[in-house]
Image (cartoon, rainbow, N blue to C red; front, side, top):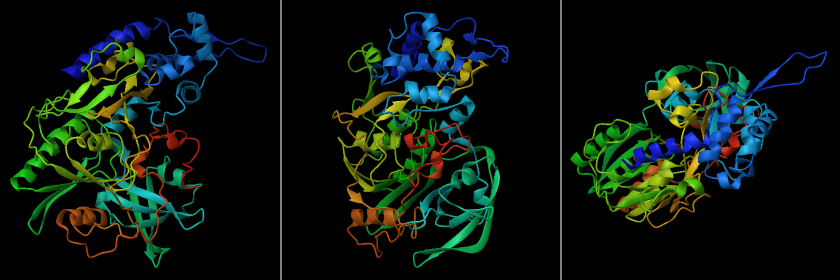
Length: 504
């Protein structure tokens, strides 16, 4: 009910702060003898400014977003006209310099599908690395999405590729070759021996499928090691509506008398806060009086709430605003959890870790996480619905403006008031994935899981955890949408124009 109240409150705010003219604001440019009349359409810019002025977490820190920035409507429209490119306008004018995570798309359907785990994809998730100190690049498969085109091909986690369509990958061409407009491409596979990578002559053809839905639960199992029953779950995205499936997995864990849990979030970039509440409750408990986290908004929004109204407690059922069945949670009521997290773990993944820490021991194995202690909401050009995206009011979206924004609107803190993890969560046990020995996910010999098992049982693993070949990773492939204008992190914000420079 609290989230529903918040939604209605935002609607009330937007009526005042996001006014819309009956006619689309258009400015005519001066005509010379050699020019024709051009109309500068500023609908997108208007939508962006109004939305960020109302909801942006840093609204008070961006002078151009001040409520009194413009004295007249004419002055406001003239300002928008001066910035005809919406992307440049957003990045150069409206975003706070410390904002790493606001993203956007010129097609709201692509963005909303992306956030729902639906994309045009061949189902291959991979990382990229330089080859030594050269500008050459190789790829390594992290996992394959179930029921995808890649799942039907001879390719798996731990495989390597060095080229696409017979062209060697480099820091200058990898983006166009792997994330360009080509729906089908052929990977030129490779082999690593003695720290040397070489082509092996194998080719794998992959084709992107429209509307591929990724199951966020990649794999789960129960491992019996000595007198321990260890539940293992790899969860790759906090997709709204996946709470029921999580509950079923934990039901299996309970039925098999699981004593310990290893939660694998190493590639999980986050997602729904409501789903994070469900997962945290499945691990720790369902006492709805216990505070999991508190949300903070910009100053003018925060002032509208009473103390406690923005608290988010543990939950007892799968029931959410997403229409899930209101089923009791199969909580494990644990006092300790082992979480595998890396520099590809962010947002809701970090929220679960931070939210649980005041109540139980959280053992973080892996590398330092991304550091996203903020929340975002999807907005579209729909003033009648407060510019919030909602499938039920999709027919009200301005047909002449299909842009969507996913701006940072909040900051989160746990029940102890801790929110200072913008630099990422530092692991208790640092262990980087070795791209030459990735192992099989869910297998007790997979290095990160093996380390967790060692910590649980006290039995040393019979393998080395030394990273033989430092990965020097580019952000994984799941940070990219196949459409160039959906940008996820700060170093990807200009990816439609400039390749990622993390390799350089």
